[in-house]
Image (cartoon, rainbow, N blue to C red; front, side):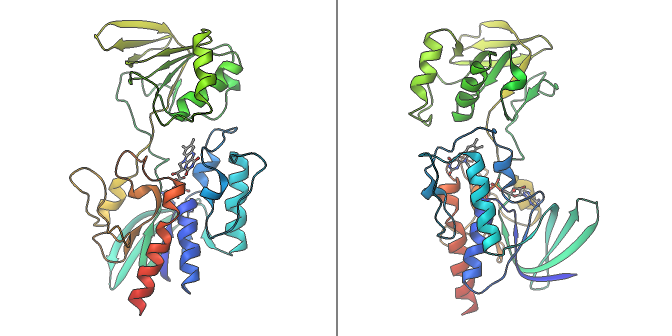
Length: 326
Ligand SMILES: Cc1cc2nc3c(=O)[nH]c(=O)nc-3n(C[C@H](O)[C@H](O)[C@H](O)COP(=O)(O)OP(=O)(O)OC[C@H]3O[C@@H](n4cnc5c(N)ncnc54)[C@H](O)[C@@H]3O)c2cc1C
């Protein structure tokens, strides 16, 4: 049995930031991460650029400077990895926390490593920083389970010459459509909104609109995909009129949501609106000693917390733990 003062679940930017803040309070937290440092970012589109400028992604007050105005995925991987290594953060990589249970005056965490070997850890406090990226929002339409459908976009090359339907109207959808068009895919973006989302990066939108105006990308507003078949997708507009489009691949880029069940099993209360209860000023849940950090604390479909904001949760947690220790 391993005994720890604080265990952080998840080595995303917000889990790492929490670890540094706790270190500063004289604690030496253990991070347990089911893959490796900033795993979610390593799964993002290979050539993506963040919408945030680098200083807004900094953790532990360590400067993040980049060649361009916005960091690339590779620069972010390099930054967070370096920060974790320089701070000698204790990370057990490739180990999944399966559950948290109250035990004595703390908690017991059951884990399984990549060889399927179980372990049990005891901790006085637990910070859940598990993010949301493992849980794409499913649309719930026939055909969504087909192999040609993906909820993640990595890179455009495999789609050259193919008919691709992108579902969604966020930055991810717009960025993917542009990349796909550049490699010669025939792209249709199907979006339920009647206009472009206001969150789209303003420096990207003009390029996208120009491609649509030239007929290089098809944009279908106020529409949704209602069925996916082997060689086509069925689209329905606001009036209920259906049409079908030839299709080889579907990218359902409809966002993600945190794993709430992991929290409820640990006794954490979920508000009637569906988000976890926590105290704003401390990030502590209704279970004393269990804290939330990062996007797992999101209220609305995971969009109001991102690295820019979630990186500050760790400081609140560290200050609260320090005040408890007197
Ligand atoms: C394409 C894209 C672009 C983005 N651009 C920006 C941007 O420009 N600016 C910005 O601020 N935000 C941006 N975001 C959002 C941002 O990346 C997330 O908000 C951020 O990653 C959240 O950090 P986190 O630490 O809360 O969670 P995550 O980064 O998701 O980290 C959670 C970690 O927990 C691990 N984990 C999960 N469950 C377990 C378990 N049971 N046991 C052990 N480990 C576990 C995961 O493997 C993961 O490493 C972007 C997101 C996407 C998808």
